[in-house]
Image (cartoon, rainbow, N blue to C red; front, side, top):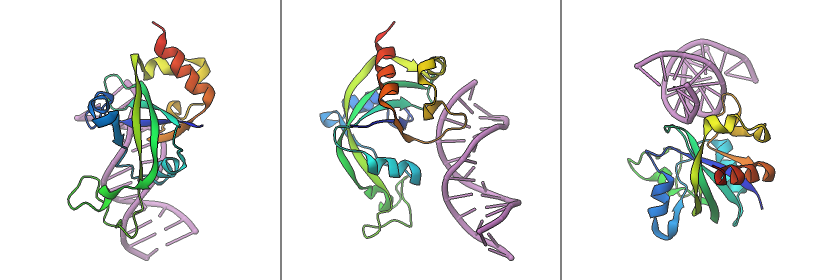
Length: 154
DNA sequence: GCCAACGTTGGC
DNA sequence: GCCAACGTTGGC
């Protein structure tokens, strides 16, 4: 089992939106970065991910999701006029992938980026690396446990 | 709204 | 294959 972190801008799709989704499940479409895509493709059913709100006030880790369907073609890439359309993609050459994720929990209290930066045990986390913009990336099991612990404490 | 830090594109 | 210009991400 592996752990990940996935980012979404809450104005685009928040964890509350996920909670309202059918079966609390959604496809994670729109990743248009090769490195992030490759991480999506490496995800296995049962893997868990931290759901992170980027470009939020404040930016924060807000919950945990589980991978319920492994990578398959992101068909939004060839949907005419769609915001995630990529003219180089087609059903024959999908280029981009997505997975389905299901909500496991919304943290009782979100953990702000500022708070995360102060946690010694999270040193080395990709999210906290200066200049990091990767919207999907792995998280070590140890770091994942730290998130779970932080989410519980007042 | 600013801008640092990227990633991508396209001319050469 | 280099790299300047451009576009995007995302914190502040």
